[in-house]
View 1 (cartoon, helix red, strand yellow):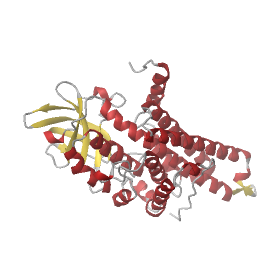
View 2: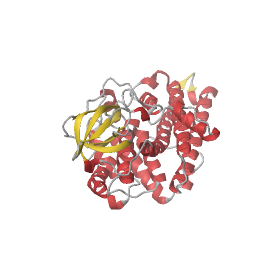
View 3: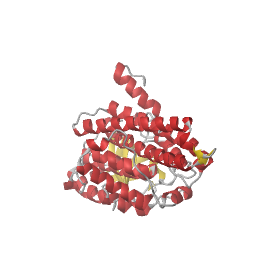
View 4: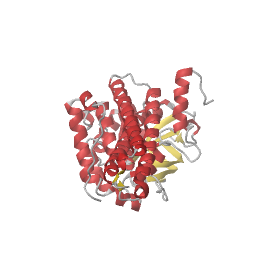
Length: 392
């Protein structure tokens, strides 16, 4: 791949709403993506291999647990900084952002929010640097949008718990050192447990033959009479609300991240349309191409304003799960539409690995489904505005 010429669109001057620290964090991540991700990502995606050498760099730019306090090894940043980091990382690739999101919101967050002081001190500092990597076990072969129906369970055996069951579509699973797993106890209450690699009966087979998130490692979590020390249970978890809080944090990051993918597609299309000559003039001069580009930048700008406001609410402690759902659903759908329109502007070149568009499009087909499907988030908004649940 050639030099990364990416220039971020900012049609409404949103930089004016950011602090100098925000811009420094974002620009550092942007330069890291240009230097470390862009030159290699197409090759890794074609080979369906996760670039493990990027883990250290993700830790160095604050990509693991940005909002985790410094006392536990995190950088202690605000939520707008977290969002900006996800935007820049996903501009590089959704799969790399998935690795960052899972580590941050689905592994570090639950340990920080629900864990004991011993667990926080043991795991969080090493997770922040990438010395330890984690994954999140909620989705099961027969339970996706209805996680409350999970069958993975554990029993109290005196000095330990015995865990049985299976999880699937788990990002980071093939190489994760720990897994934050959600399972039911004998009373049917959902609890969180930390399962460590090497525990007898615990395996993580990799999922192959994916057309999407090819540069991300996906796998299963299999538990066959796994002995879990009692110190590994997250003491402050009780019920489905706990894992859903983790998902809210992840969905917030996705709302920002999807914009990054859309921005990359738009920037590629804009540059290409000015350089591609047909009928003796650049295709950017044709009305239908300008329509596509104008609609793209309009939708990207609306999404940028949506996430900025959501970030302010998040930092103020006022963001609701329904507001986060709206942003995730809107922004991922927007990014998918931008990717599809961009592919048309590039014509046949749009499917080439010489450009990022088709990779973004395929990745976003997963992003629109995971952490709550497009339809589920629509119904969350419907429930919030009507007070009537469509789920039951």
